[in-house]
Image 1: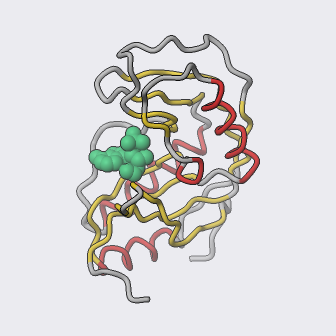
Image 2: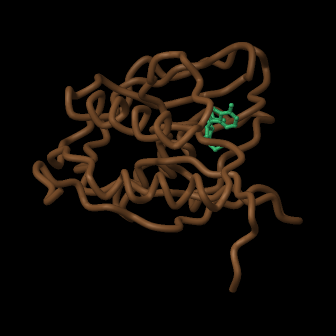
Length: 181
Ligand code: 2AM
């Protein structure tokens, strides 16, 4: 299948089936509300949102992602939060240094490939619900920590389909402390 010339892309940590299962359980445990639940298959943590991407930019970025050096790490998701404006319920945790380094390397790679990148600092969160009503949902103060052994990262396409948004993983890269340059 030929790819369209401009794709809507982002780089993400894509949960393995066990972590995805725990995330879906967490969604199930939240108080029922009229929010839009993120489909289980779509759950992910964005490292960098790229937006509209030309074929040349994608090629440039993929080449640079081949050279990213970061060791596998463990992410422990312990915290639930709510952002009032987008009415988003999220889960997140502390930032391991490798995660921050990875996000920084992604940003540098994207800048070199002429992406216009949001200057706001990286935030570790994974959206569980959007448009959550009432405007301030009552969330449990504590959750059972979700331990995520992060082994790779993914280039993902955001597709708008009849059934809603669908995220398609285009390619993954294993985390490696050293890369052959
Ligand atoms: P969100 O879950 O907070 O909406 C694909 O859209 C992914 O990129 C989502 O995880 C989304 O985060 C994130 N993202 C970050 N900045 C974005 C932007 N400016 N527009 C759309 N999605 C963005």
